[in-house]
Image (cartoon, rainbow, N blue to C red):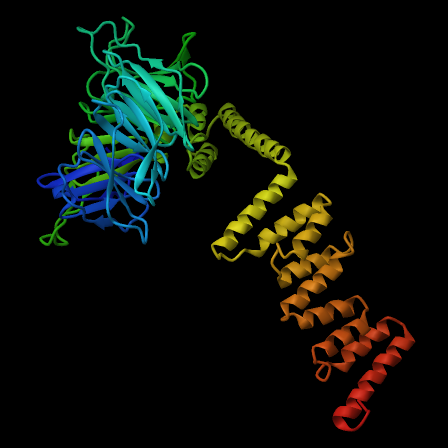
Length: 588
């Protein structure tokens, strides 16, 4: 199959880590997207690698038993390690902080810790088989404070860090899911969700963690249930049932994705597309819930947008001292049983030591989706779509593949529909955001830049001043300048000068700013002369001791332009006296 047929690919620069096996254990933290390679319980080293920090974090820790779970807090300041079913150990990674570790035992008697999740830089949730415990970590005091707890029988749990929601599986069949939402020290219990298990299965199966995923799609949080046996008699294939999880109100079943096949599946979400991998055929299909489906009165049924295709073949470079340039890369075994899939778009091969991000290629979609209207609907929802949309439009107008006028009209309507939504949203924002709030936001941003000693670009001050002037907030402008909220600069002084016609005091404010700069003497003289304030310019130049070196012609020309004979005589006499003092002769 040519490369133009593959619309899914693994990222070109994966995160590399030491393979699992022997003394090396591998863990993945879904919140920070970090891979931990722990050797000998940490005694011979822990290496942490993430998506952005290409420089890995390496450290050693005392081997106190087998590590069951290990994660950094958001920001990598505190490390949490679970080695037993009762306690979690903590170690500060804060500069000048003590290296001694501390631990926290779960509060519920006879409970076993199933795992834990960091919800912020200093807040952590223990999930036990008898409920959840929400703690604040106090690194300076090396202890934890219980904020809130909830007793509930738990079979397994799932965490969506993007939305700070933990999903707990309860009841005997594991199909009652209880979500909890965490934010800024608070824990909220959301409406529970009952998953409809297949009725036609040979025996009553339990809902497993493998068949559930949580992901944010088009800004909304969904629970995705992989149902291996359809509830309808006329369909034998598996399907993905999507439940919309809301902060307020009941959870609703909204979409069903028809897979039309059975076997082992895994789910990713890439660019708001639901990607379902099928291990038996080593192919994947994509679904877009924004595209029109078949509505049965309750839910919308969706078929795959594109034909099933494999992920683009991936070559693993030969590593190690034996590698030479003549050795060709080794093909990676795609859809391997050793692959682990994490939300939203991560695939990990612990046996190979690779973490990939799954990506969608839009160029192949153009030829795989012949319906131009549906193609445009699909492309307009993708992030990197502009170049491909332009290529489609160009293709429609070319001689070799010219589209009919009705197709061209449809494409234009689709484009302009989205463009109108963008314009409306932009107008709505400009109407809704009051100017005082905009100014306050700009000032907060400038304060933050100053706090971290980052140079504030002139255009930010210019935006503040123009917004103040546009809404006649001159008193606020005066205060900002008087109390040096806006830093002095020549460009800012020039901008103030340009405002004199609508705000006369801006002239003096500009001069005061130039004087404070002490490096803008020439500019001050030019400003005063341009305003025919020749005597004021002369007094200023005398005050800084520069009157012996100035050009007499410039001042005499400025005085002549005023058509004030007395002023011209005064300036003329000043320079005659200067010449007499410096050269012993009044002549010019």
